[in-house]
Image 1 (cartoon, rainbow, N blue to C red):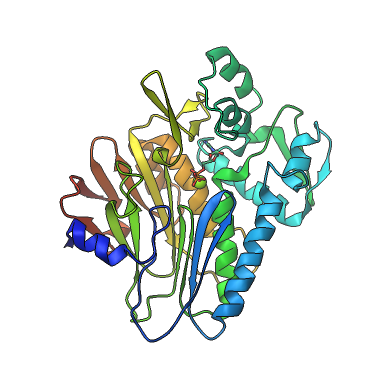
Image 2 (image 1 turned 135 degrees about the vertical axis):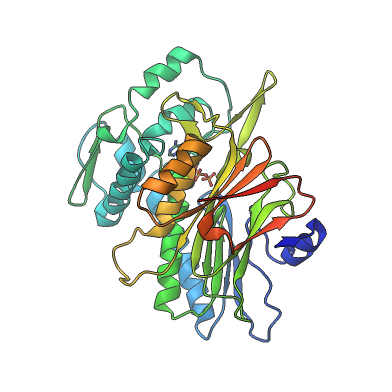
Length: 358
Ligand code: ADP
Ligand code: MG
């Protein structure tokens, strides 16, 4: 299936945040919409159904609650308390313990490519503060000694870390937030909705006309132009989470450095990929037991970006996790795993070559 660039832009003009989007229904049914800035990200919610206003309100409150819970810059978040505890055991609550536990699980499953203790290295590169700099190799090497989930310990609502270790849930927090959005949509019996939390999209149900939501995968070569797409996905009841080096980066001496760090080297991952999108089902039988697939997709999108094409596809084939991938490569290919074969659309004139892998 192919659409022209122009038609894609027209189709997608309606809602488009951070390159990912939901789409226009054009039906009589009026949704409740809201734009929110939280977790350092522009977010957009569009919710249908009789309870849509109440659900949007609950969703906004939940996003504010999560920001307060997960922030590592606010003075009084439990993450800040943990980071300042200097090795002491800290009460962080059951919810944060569960998220830290999930982070540890995905760190192990990805051989450390996802690692939320990479924070001191991210800080040294200035991505947290905006004062970007290239740290020298000795500094990076010494910071890497504090990195690794083996430095993090959990026990019944409490956590403690080895004294120099720092926690940054930036690579997983918005994914967890999208799990919470799904939970709210379930609770309010919302038939259809979209939540775009930066590069984390939740496509709940279908569009009002019963067709799948259209989710654009941003073209990493044109990050400022949100109508420039690498491909289009037709998704229902799915999370789609994108990580890419194009989202946050700086230049120094002709070299570009981005914000996704390879924990093996302490340097921005140079894996030959420009973005990774991870897609998974957003429904689950049990309403409890979050974090869920939104959290998983976020952790994996960061990790698979670090891994590169070959390792990412090996992971997809062998991990046993039910996910599908879209990998955009530096050499101009869009690699799509076979579960998305019928659900993706090429963008004519994008200049990309499209490959389906099994
Ligand atoms: P974004 O948050 O920009 O949508 P990601 O989900 O890929 O993108 O998360 C990137 C953020 O996660 C970085 O800004 C940094 O704070 C943190 N981070 C960087 N490298 C890693 C890594 N290898 N593992 C876990 N977190 C990382
Ligand atoms: Mg992530």
